[in-house]
Amino acid sequence: MIAIISDIHGNLEALEAVLADIKQRDITTIYCLGDIVGYGPNPRECIDLVMDFPLCLLGNHDQGALFDPEGFNAGAERAIFWTRKMLESGEPRKNEHRWEFLGELPRMKREGDYLYVHGSARNPLNEYVFPEDIYNQRKMERIFALVDKYCFQGHTHIPGVFTENLNFVSPTEINEHYQLGEQKVLVNVGSVGQPRDGDNRSCYVILDQDKKTLQYIRVDYDFGKTSAKIYDIPDLDNFLGDRLKDGR
Ligand code: ZN
Image (cartoon, rainbow, N blue to C red; front, side):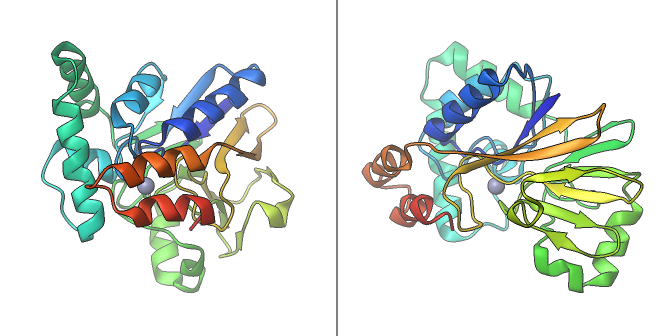
């Protein structure tokens, strides 16, 4: 069994709650699909917690912190520059280790029938695949053509399963469970640190590769604590704290 998490975004309270939930289920293999940092108040601590995972991918915000951020809105860009400042102002040896770790993150990983990306199979770092894209047949066909069987992704912070016949089902519509079959699917695992599907709880997926089943898990965390930290940091927009409560 593998726990697949994504889009932590420097939210330490959410990450700790999710890791505790995973541990309590006796799952020891954790994959992270990127965006460890950006938006949230604890980038260093979050990096330190994911460093030893057997798989961690590069997200667009991680890349923004590493290089010059491109294509972000003003608030997100300010958060990225603040994140970079944090990664430069920690203990020097630890900083070096963290930069090295971020700099070596892969953009995608293929394991048999399973493909793991941050955004999409076509553009692993930056492409969004939103639920409404099921009406964009051309886009979806091109993406599915690059997927052998099952693709796990994040980036939109909206969990759910896209099928090759252009359906999208949210976790609640499938009672949090999905059986992988012959059909190709794209599985968005949702976001740990900034859910945007109207549910403010952290979201992740447990994949059972033997039974080919997946389960969506939601975990409560103290978002008030995270928001309070965000409100205290002038470089992080208050909106970034507000949205944690609403899950938007
Ligand atoms: Zn993200």
